[in-house]
Image (cartoon, rainbow, N blue to C red; front, side, top):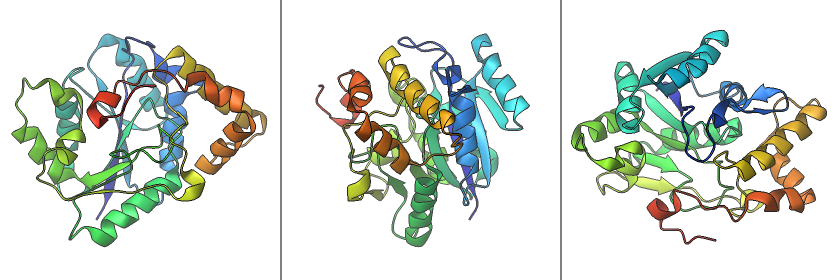
Amino acid sequence: MKFVATIQARMGSSRLPGKVLMQAGGKPFLQRHVERVMMSRLVDKIIIATTVEPADDAIAELGRLHGIEVFRGSEDDVLGRVATCLQPYSGWGHVELVGDSPFVDPQIIDEFVGFFLKNKETVDYVSNGIEISYPNGAEVNVYSVDSLLECDKRVGKHNPMREHVDVHLYQSGLYKCENLLAPPWFNRPDLYLEVDTPKDYQVMKAIGDHFEAKDKKIFTLSDIIDFLSDNPDIAAINQREHRKYWEIKGISGA
């Protein structure tokens, strides 16, 4: 089975406009994200799934400059956007990623894809995002393209939940889902490795700048955890920010 990875990315954001093209260590977050996914041994293709809004021309240009396919669709109907861009890949597996979590670890991607391949007769969806144990922003969702195409047909076109994607698999009760918990050395749900607020940007920029200064182009999740453990003042900057996905996952606010 081949695997296609999509990165959902857009410039529009009420809390931090333009976040995916903000820079850390001299590179836009989205470029770093693509470079990290390219390190995966099991992802065969990468697509940036952005919107038709003029502001997202800049994202399309970044994709062109780096030879990455860009699909443009609805800004609000994210389920439809991702499903439509995946229609040519029926029979493939899908690695779902979001652009505001640019420091995803390619080794974790491969571990989850490998788990899915070994268990695909009994498991439809593999994630570490249903129950949070890894650092927030290290989420990886793996499932078949055909499962998402089914969801796109089943969920009403005016359903406001179409702004989300994988939630339609694990909350439907129709798919066999597996949430993988972090091993002890990755069990840091108190850390937030995402870019959604100005405080998030401070943390993520500090991480990117630190490893760029060390000339470490690809750094692992372990490297990031070590850095934040050694610099708890940086880790604390965004630990009390409200997260929009808390309501979906049933997580209490800080």
